[in-house]
Image (cartoon, rainbow, N blue to C red; front, side):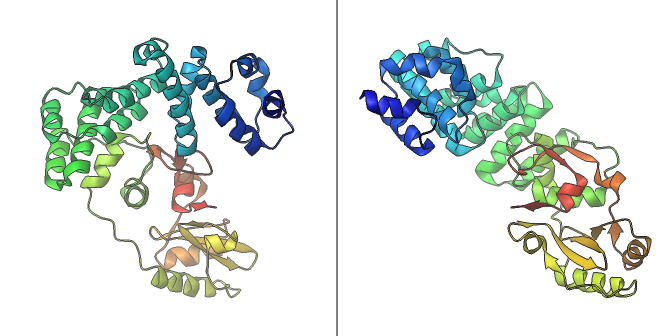
Length: 344
């Protein structure tokens, strides 16, 4: 046993080995001083900090409760599962009430954990739709499963956002478009208003990203996406043909278009690129949007062909409230990154 525990403590040992041993031996009391030591915060081997937190739960360290609720509320499923396991170990040892007593209701992560516990116990979590934290409210909306309870809640919901979350939950359960449109109309069709963002760009972005948005997306975007008229994407082949024809008039002859993933040798996104002389033009698949270096001749030729040039001013507008996954982050992006999106 001492030799096995030494492998856990060895920072030069393979991370996967340390994690596997922590899964098996994390309950060992003699590990606790090492697990709690400040130096553990600097141990950043992949997956090890999470495994250490889980082990603290296994060994009964109640001081790890809030860190575990934060981990359990991670948007990464493989991390949240580790946090849940650590919390389950604490609950098994001390009971639910004792673990709950360690939480701080001011922390959204702790409130999210309470919502999950209540739902698992068969309790109604509809009231959590009014939580001021969008992530907690989103969690509640994904868990409620009683249509009648949601309709009763709509009659006394304390905020417009809570009503929007209830509407989203109803739509998830019954796919009744007319019902959610009626709720949306009764609220005045609220939207996240963004200075400088016109309807053409808004519709293209909404149609691509709002239906599959991340947990922290504002409910106004969600309901707007459900109730809006479907956006018809352009004919990609025809759009590229017109772009090529326009660029040919600006000389020199453009190269054949390639998908953004091909240009980066991996991944996918929402644009094709056309190399043209010493520059590259990006043609969005979401609409008649193009961008590139500020070449007057190139820009003029494309605009004359009916395309819309996205310059720095327009491209830098932050689309707030709409969270999109982008290289590990899930925060609002600007117009440029949304219209010309690439992810490896």
